[in-house]
Length: 133
Length: 490
Image (cartoon, rainbow over all chains, first blue to last red; front, side, top):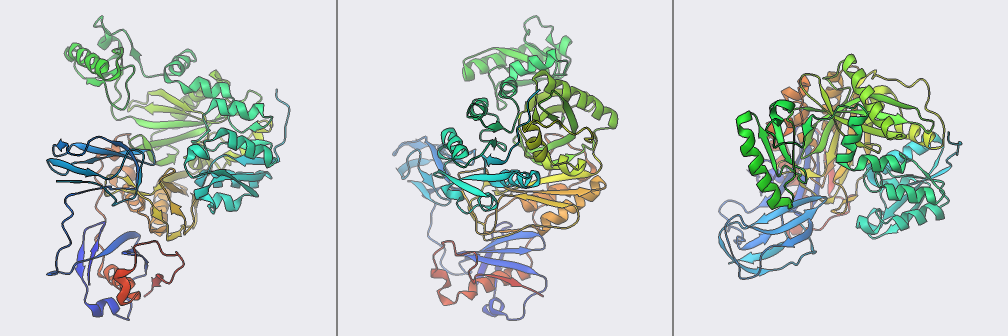
């Protein structure tokens, strides 16, 4: 089992024996699973771990065409139209959550192939906002 | 002189930690608290603690907590004789305060006229000048080229209509002034359609020091010491303390005198805060007055041994302020604001279900929180989950207690700034009390320590607990009391 800790980016391969080891490790920890994520509290720090593909396994599908919402919130503005050519770093969407505004920028130069959200839409973190060619 | 009007039942027109705080003040004063809530807050902590709770409407604040008609109807129909606004929402809304009074209810806050007088920055600045309160020296007469001599360098040229850093030029050399005026005017005209400029003295790395003031309805206004709130990010306070490590007893007397003069100038009553910028040379300048109970009021309460909400309730009912109020702190208190935000990723606000929430305790520790385990942290409201406050005989004792308390706080399911707060409190300038309003922007806090092997092993076991089908489980939110939560002990 390969695990990635998302706060620090640390990755570790656990043997199945390690994952199932019955003797608990040193130190008092707190762990809770939330679907695809496990949260661990240890030594005053909070870690968030997810399973990633093991070394040598197929890489996950390339999602680089997707424009993804980095946070949950409301789409305050859609600043491009489908078919528009945009420069790298151009602001495509403005998201708003909890009194903060956050721009979603073009990851590279290209054409906006499709838009999946309109102004005013509520989106969740990781939701697809549109695609680039 | 206002006749005494006892408060028996009070509507708490807010949510989250401040609603809980006001409810606790009601209990201490023998007042029956009534909560209001939105659909998202059906089982919220403030709802559970109140004697009665009234549903206002859907989750967006505009349709619930900020719907004046619904809030007033709730107050009337639940038999309340008073309304406490908390902070935010209606707290600095003079029209709402008037509507409360016109409905025959007691408004637990300053007179609506005082809210209005301090609401507009330019007129309030003029009013403060007339009252003899020091404001940042400045001028609107820039064209005679004399501004630099009259204000002194460095100075900052600002667009009158500007804000958020736009249309601002810092000038350190008199020769740069004409160019700065010209370019600032061009930018102001382009950005705001208004090229009106003014210049004021530029304060290098000032401290944010504010004075807690309190007035009763018999014309008595007192100052209850200062707080230092220099640790801010994007003008949002993060860590506050009382007293300020920079304020001597002599400076405290001058700050408190100026704050009382500011409050008297607008016939202030109830709790309020006069904010100042404090320069290195000990000079200070009026920034603004907040006509409400502040988020950071607990550090004053802990350092001076007061309950400001109880004082608000008593004075709103017409009682005079007690004659034996302390003027200076007898302990040191520091508060850290726990936000649902990702400090490692641009401080983006975070949402989700709080699967585990455990609050710290111990000598000198106080937690003002509005959440419990199982709560959903949503996009609808402010991302502040709780305030952890530590009191100590000295600043360092309070600081160490706070670091330990933050390390005891367990929040799983939603990313918080708990670790960031600890690392800030342990940094050298914060430990030394060498604070200023831009410190957090330039402070390099050490990184989160890497997870130990035990962390990976615990996570591996948590993934395995579900068996072979684990990966196909939907990423939905499990019940917080599901078997998925477990404790690994030595």
